[in-house]
Image (tube, helix red, strand yellow):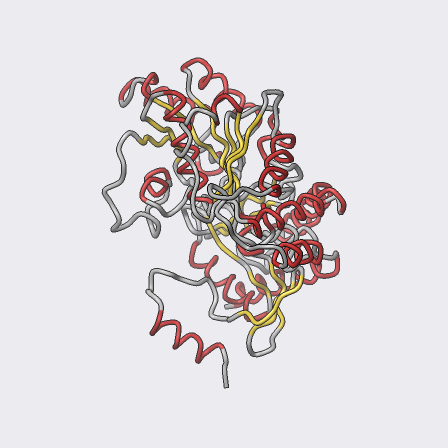
Length: 429
């Protein structure tokens, strides 16, 4: 009989250990914010495929659009025979991207591809090689994007050397002693000590760090980065791969700041569970590479484009931006209340931007020492209770909540109840 244990053994024998999994339960089916494993056990999904499922597992509108596309054709390679859905999706995203400057959009397959191509476009436009990124940031697992990523274990260890002309500055983390002024001062130091700003093509930043711990860049900080980039002719790239498509209460998180970036990278929830990524940017910048310089065999697949068009419809029709705001309030109200209790592990900072929600686990309530072991314990205990939960952060002590925005209030409340129960159980021992 097939079960989680037998599949784990088969996985270990067939798949490299580097492809790690957060759980040892194997999916059999899923609907919206619920998942059932191969043994028939039900789970509330607070991971959402790592922010891929803002519209939930198998949203009926997305599935219908994909079925219609499957009946027509599945692949031509856009560079060989183009198709309307690619164009239509680009037109819609060009309208949705913030700022008055005319936009153009390129489609690819993965988030790492989107970041790689944004850097290629920046270099083509500016004629410069250098890139500024932030510590704690996650931008992918390819060689270039590993170089941009600001977390060593497990993403970079053993894989170097990485490309040159990449420079890191600290991301603001006020509760860990890094203010926004500290970050800006560090950027100035890089320009004084490491590289002439006239050699920098782009600065890339997650408006809310994902893997880095859900730290939020303030509108003032992002506005200051825009000023610095403009002063030195540097392009500002917003990496919205985890923050995009209603997760924060806006189509893109950068919209909360009022800043117009030069490019935005996107993937994850763009196509509601189907592989699709992209770069949307100012038209005159996006046109810098020569014909043939951009693309990819599977880039902008017909199936992914059909799914993404349906996702955009669902976000509008079901008011998911508003639901993200409501979800964030519900969850953070509950977490703040838990942080005041003595029968749960020490909860430090609770933060969110819309439905992008996180809290930190600390060694004690009065201190500021991260507790990554407790985060691991909590995720394991939650899974035992029937809740899929993920940790993150450079200290490994942050718990993130990425429940689908389409989840019912009843399922969200159930998930928060399961989280509370797991916290109490962890405190007991």
